[in-house]
Length: 181
Image (cartoon, rainbow, N blue to C red):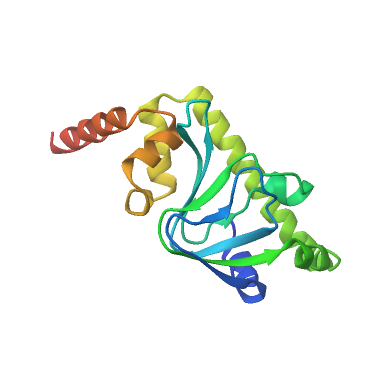
């Protein structure tokens, strides 16, 4: 998890960006030129398959780092879109500012921490998809991200977990019945 100190530093130096519901932080095939911290609201990253079906790759809520990191670092077009699910305020640092800041050892260490955390998150998600069944993936998600069900609708959460919305409904209803037993 990104530390409070890192979040606060980015919030102090970053420019506030407002993204209205259904607007984009970055669109697929465009270069992402910002990295930021979500102050309020929520966004989701997604790909479209050959049938134009949305496949959610990441969910971003309060205090999450948001970027298309590969695009940000390499200046190549983003393979995914990042769209606001709700009106969202983000503190962003442009690529130009980022390149200035990394000349300072303290900021270089801070950005390394962010990079490390993004990589660790990716590894955990990949491992979860490979090793855990749907129920365990769901339980892991809600245990790590307590407000996820308040921030996002069920169909986006299901897509993120790589299950159908009906499957997620069944998992949730099973858990409610088991809690009553």
